[in-house]
Length: 399
Image 1: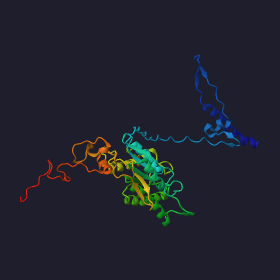
Image 2: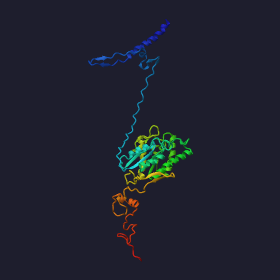
Image 3: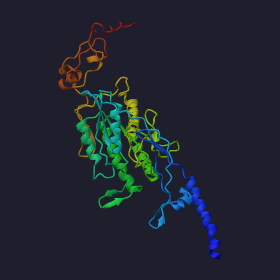
Image 4: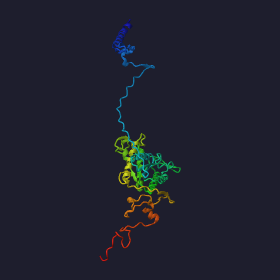
């Protein structure tokens, strides 16, 4: 009897809880059918524990354990501003006598060539020749030997300007015979500088303006230091050969000199300039590279600057040859017989006679025929006596 006396208060509490839960159950909403009559939704069945403790405390029982509560919804991310679309220019057809800018080097050079094509897209008198080899460098001359290939390219393409970009692939050992020489050693530096000087000597003999673009910063600190290390070699050799070193470092770094992947493009828009690997360039980055190169070309040669063209065409008869002594020479006529005559087709200071055929051109008359140019009365080379009409009559003796 005592056991029943203890159990009945607990049973009464349970009964009251069940009754309260049933009374607190919300009435399901009514539905209006197509006939217009209100149709009551059937009540949903609820378990004993759900009526006793409420639906929020009950979790479904799965596989012998209570299932975990549902994960909270992910936080709503604010929309990220997207980059404005990058405008790509339509390249106009180039004239047959357009000045040619030849770009050689590695993947950086390939990006520069594409960017220069965009930069000079509306210039019919400027054509870009992309002769880059993306995986090349000065270390692996067994893969691609730039010192052997450059004279061939110059002789075949006859560019008016040469742009070089090398070094990004050169963070590796040099192979000399059967030995492998690590970077930053004396032997490595001497060999690498010799290969740089081989290129700059060839370009100096060729005699046209050339521009060497510095190696870019990279995301890895060690790689960035190596690029700066190589740029010191490039700058010295290029200056010695009379070329122009184009330093692009600050355009792809923060104020403290550290690597950045995004920054202002040539129009001042904030864009991704480098790809995810921290080495290659995006299209916006390529345009920025080319911007620095084109600016220096315009500044030094006047080409494409909208002013007087200060750059004469490369002589199509010249050839670079290596003599028996191993030295490079530019072989060919010094004065082209096919270039247009200066000053509107007339020789400076000569009589107003326009040259109409090649055999009458001053260069042809002097060099091929071996004849003297016609004299002009009163000019310094007029030795006729007495002085011809228009000349200066000598003053009488004694005055």
